Structure formats: structure tokens, C-alpha cells
Length: 306
Image (cartoon, rainbow, N blue to C red; front, top):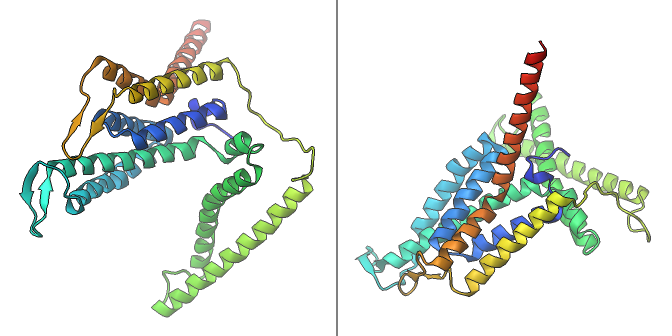
């Protein structure tokens, strides 16, 4: 399978450890600086991976979701000691609830964006490679499920187009006819899914799945580049966790907003967290520049020979 970017070509262990670290940090670090770093880096990497599709998804779906989530929290959460005004219901509107709503919204959106990057980089074959020997049954079920969803979407799109050509799509006819057409498409998809399951089972049986002593083919090799990336992830992740344990990125929202500011320890933890989140982008940009330099040298060499 062709890699989405240079970072996707790293060993699956490096890819999985990276996303495990950034997702855990994004979910549990509610310091404003950490949330901003996570959100910006997630948006940047998703756009690098998916291009215009990611731009539309981020700005037309995630940002409105962030705004709605941030507005909903003060409507239901009235904790905090800094009262700004009172709502028509008589409940107070506090600065702490607004700040926590923005933080929770940023955390939610950044996690969703990181998961979109995870789905683009961590393919099912990588997941099976990592966990096939540890949890073979669960890893197989998860990989098949993740693979089935986009396959089902593509198949239902094909069936809908075929039904539209004969005037039996869900957009044709009266309400009753459209319901019948929808049930027909659903019946076709259920039949296709059952047939696909039988074919998959027969294919797995013919390949000896579950037999003792069965080996597995793998195209992944752990080289020096992967070793360097793994050491970098362990160093950054360890330092960030140590800084968190020492209170370097401490922040609270209730009952009042308090936290660490620009202290030496905090600044170094922010820098380590930024380096961690930007690792794929740095790797990709460096590879693009090397490739552009090689292309420029080849072009110059061809021009000199002419």
C-alpha cells in the first residue's frame, strides 16, 4: 500500500506510539498552551495528509462543532466564582464555565482531528502486524471492522447509482415508493455483506488461518530511522510526563482559574510538546525539501548535458 506521507512509511510501532502519545496528551492536558498546540498541529497534519478534503472537514465541520460545544457548556455548567451576569433562567454565567467550555471544545475537536490522521496513517495491516500475536482475535476483528466500513460505503454508493439508473433510487417516486426503494437497497447490501463474509471465511480457511505453526508475512523492517524516531518519542514523551508530574503544566478551571505560567520548567515542557506534535510535519517537510533538491540537481544535470 502506498504511504500517505513520509511519516506513514515509518515502522508501525513508531506510528502507533506517536498517536498514542498525542491522543493521551490531548485528552488529559487541559492547559491552554497545550490545547492550542495540539489543535493547531492536528489541523496542520490533517491538511498535509488529506489536502482540500481536510480543509473542508476542519473548517466546515470541526470548527462549528467547537463553537457549539463551547457555547453549550456555560448554559449547563454554572460553577465558578467569577460571575459575569445572570441568564434568563436565573443561573449565573461565570468566566470559569466559559473558559472550561472553550477548553473542552478544543480538546474534543483536536482528538477528532488526531483520529482522522490516525485512520489515514495506521492502516489495518499495521494494526494486525502490531497486535496480531498479542491479541490475534481482537486485532483481526478490529481490522476487519475498520476495513468493512469504507468498503460498505463504497458498495452502497455503487448500488445506489445502479438503482438510480433504473429509476429505483431513494430519491425517485412517492414517499411510499422511496421507502420501498430504500428497503430494496438495504436488502441488496445485507445480501452482499453476508456473501462477502462467506468469501472472507473461505479465503482465511484456505490460507490456513488458526492452524498451529502458521507464519505471517510482513513487509515492515525496523531500521536506524525508526530507531531514532522511537528514541525521540520516548525522550519527548518521558520529559512531558515528568513535567506534568512536577506541575509544570498545571492548570485548573474551578472554582477559579489558576495555573502555571511562563516558568522555565513550563516553557521546556511546551517546547517538548510542540516538538512531539509537529514530528510528522517536520519529517514530511524535510523529506519534501530533500526530494526538491534532488529534482533540482537532476534538472541542472540534464540542462548541462544538453
